[in-house]
Length: 602
Image (cartoon, helix red, strand yellow):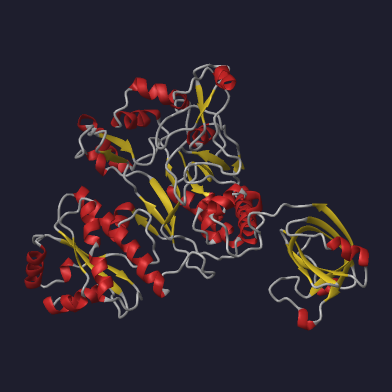
């Protein structure tokens, strides 16, 4: 391999094959760097030593594919290249074979300033030759291998599930596959193997996993692709803690394969607590929690504060702190104050922001020091006090979410620029994992005026909340129904503000599953039409079971320090779900459509 030679190989014959990474012609001496995925080695063509081989080397250009036979030689100290692993040795060429020529590429793998992303995706086969992309794909392989090895050692079987299956619309839109032999009928590509992995538990394979491709037709963003890879697993008879133990185990193995040591057990936090402290169900634990400081006001100053901001005596006041943000100018503080407009746009018309520490100390001298101390504010920190009059639980949740977004925006803008909030590519990164638990079982859809499953309709609920389900049937369609108070046995694993995976303990009894469908406003006929095969399977001795699915692409993206999934997927799609390299999707011929019984509506 081109990255294998070392000083100990000096005097040995070697054959190197790869691409011409760089060429330097000094007249009697021609130097090329020959590259493959293992690295580069300098090759020397000496006209005085071998004129014929030197003459042949004059034709070499970047990205030509070559084979070179020669003798390894240790470089003299003044010519050692400390930037590469083979920098102490070079190959003195004795034979050269040009295996293939190359057109001038639109960009070179050795370039440090990259072309725009569309060009990289169009010529992905050249982009993948770059060191960074080679590293990312190798990292992906190592991570997947570590996960497979760990789960196999824990007694899990890797079992494949179908790609062409039944459409059960929920969540994102399905990708559909027309059937030629059943005109007018369609398969769907799986959004996840959810029902199949539950059926595997019914079938007696009590520990299943799969590193599996999934497909969702939804709006794309940096951490979302139409086809993606999940680490999918399911177990029989687990408590949630057992699922968490397995996940922490394979994540520890995966991160170790990438050169990082992480600690388990991960901390745990309920959904309600996460929303109250961080305004997010995937909180970034590298930043301090938001602090409710209302009780730190004196009674007199609380009344003064409530009057000044017109929020009433029962106001909510959260202090958001960004550590070590450095000196914030008056102009920047006024800019921060405009986040009030952002809050108003979210329907938070009674939200106000206090950003001026001098004014705060002047107007509330008896409370200001105690409030800042309660929130742990230190010199150099940026803090913002957000206040809103107390209202319903639903609007309170919206208020916490708005504050949580403000917290992240401020951290990215102010803490990052002063070096306090690490960037993705930092080598010694702080990985803060978290389990978020006890998600709501149902969520109210104001547009359709109905309850939806917050996770999916096969998620089990807490036993002590079962009574609320029993009493909710007459109030289906009412946002004040007890359905909104039911907690699911659902959990997410979160890392530095990114959801890595989501899972739950499943419903294993047909009678409870029917009640969930009923609570969702689904008739027996509709449930049988959509999930009949699964409901029937539940009637044949289904063991309790549960599991989780984590995004492999997201894990590798974080480990690689990348800011997009496209950097760790070999052949990704653009934000418009287009593969620029193969130019897909494309129209197909009328003959193909006719064979499938399909007519395209213009």
